[in-house]
Length: 206
Image 1 (cartoon, rainbow, N blue to C red):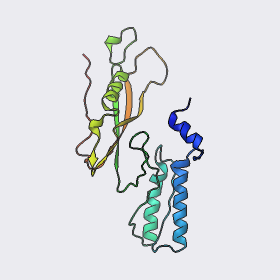
Image 2 (image 1 turned 30 degrees about the vertical axis):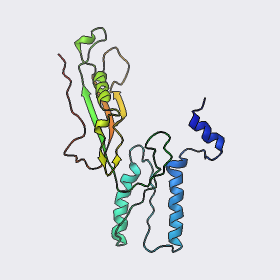
Image 3 (image 1 turned 45 degrees about the vertical axis):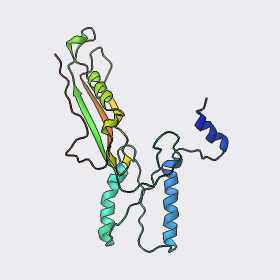
Image 4 (image 1 turned 45 degrees about the horizontal axis):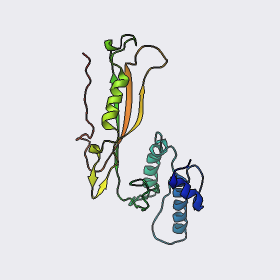
């Protein structure tokens, strides 16, 4: 049973199918089209096109591209004046039909927590502190918590979202996990890193 919105799109025939159609094949198509216009003399100046892989995982492509951008800048005596990113637009709410052009930039903090509990046997659960309980509590406090959203010029950042949550046990056993980690995506616009957006707290075992 397809959701109503998906069914409507499918029946309209006005759609494309394919992994990465909007992110980033469509963006690459737009970039190549603009590069073609520049080559045909539609505007003055220099245009540098750079495409990078691995943006969604470890950003290896962009990290490796930075030294290359610096080298090109010095080699050809360039001054970078603007950067156009052809990322797709995102809905502000489900069903949002408006199209947006993003200007400026947004900051990202990958907030990580390492929780260390006290290992115990499952037969004596009150003799220890389960690290999974600790990361679950952090997740409960932060996941989609709008108190950590930030507003600037009418724009509101999305709330924190959990990107990873797991214990560090390497194999199954009846011992409770005593170490666990969790990572959160936190977006900022004006908030300084000197004023943390994340609530730090400690869990004590008695």
